[in-house]
Amino acid sequence: MNTTKKVAIIGAVASLLLLTSVSVFADTAAQNTTQTTVQTRKDCLKAASDAYVMAVKQANNVYKTAIKTAKQTMKDALAAAKKLTDKTARKAAEKVARDAYKTALVTARTTLKTAKDAAKSQEKTAVDACLKA
Image (cartoon, rainbow, N blue to C red; front, side):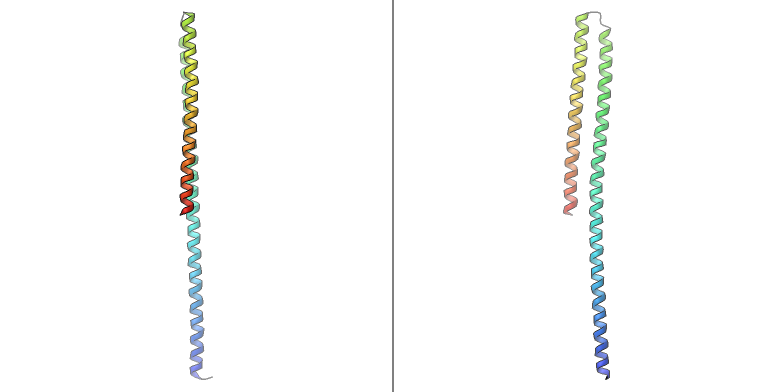
């Protein structure tokens, strides 16, 4: 085999090896980009989920506090009503205390539902943004 053919064969082999390594590098780079995108998306979705969970926990804590406050307020109002000597005034004061308690419960439930709905809406918006990214 002459020198020219050897050089041509060596050059062809070198070119083939170079193209193969570039192709492998490109595939690895694309795979790394895909893995990074998937991880970023997972992190984004986890953050959205965590934010939702924290918002619901906070809403539940606000609800529990409102219920405790309403119970204590009713208890105090009923205790004050018992001290009244006039039966009609006492009954009216007890009714006002119970009605105020019922109103406080409805308000607390409505506030809880509104907070949970807002948290769910924010989570949906965040998840949609994560999936579009």
